[in-house]
Image (cartoon, rainbow, N blue to C red; front, side, top):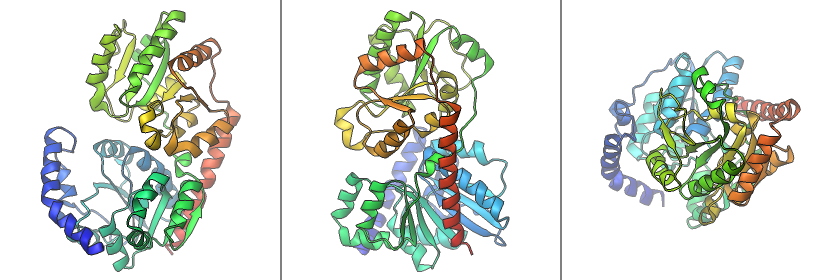
Length: 423
């Protein structure tokens, strides 16, 4: 089965190269660094071979944020370490450029395509001393090559949902061989732990979701924007998906019956949808602004659509009344939910729809702390926002302290597990 996979990756490699070049044209890839994904000559190696290299691979923004506290803690415990972070998305590269630009011990590169020769060249060039894949990143060519070279390989904050497990079950024997490459799997949930156990991984442990230990981002809106927003009753719908904006606009109109000065901030999960959301808002006769980087907020709007990467914490810090999307669309129920941990750790009152399959354990946990609440439709959403406007609410200091203590515990135990493989 591995040989079949390798033949397939060689066969589709030219087509993937073409796809990446097309994505570059449409601004979906980094215009100068996109070749890191496809050519060994552009790996741009930069490391101190006198130090051990810890390589983390995380697909996107949330996973990258979750490993930054790990890197900080590992650095404090051992000054003989360098760190390589690879990711796949343009948004994650922009975030990491901002977060690690002053840290000479941490380097970011794009993760190359999972082709046997490329993975071989990548490992020979970077020579990592330990590899940690994050969340659900499973790339067979890389995994087998890493084990061929006897490099410790960990899967941290591992997520394997029922849906994903069913897909792997189609090639169960191959799946077991793939996952058996990992020396240790730290699952992000009990469900993931149960699914991973059926794949007979070597060593499996459940510490908790590493995203609870991600540092809260204290970014604030500039004073000019705050001054404008202070004239409104504001709330934020974050990580919205196609079909949810209709519900958001209807909720907005319901809230408007009570508060004429309501302003709804929408942060689409995929910002390339901003123009579509803007056109949709016109059908509801709502005055709308798409806010790009460095734009100033207009003074006569009802809907503000955010067209920027990595700015949600600014609006979480300001609004405190947050709806998290990918939770209202029944057709997506088996792939529903977005991570609410960041908003909860910033003290927000988090609302969500009835479908949160991918983060059910997280929502259950946060709900037990009184930090999240389910709404079933636009009317319930509007009622809750109105209720929160009338009686301003956010997480108490005690709730946040308990959440941070829990996150710190997960962080320390994860660091301890990783450190065992650095000795």
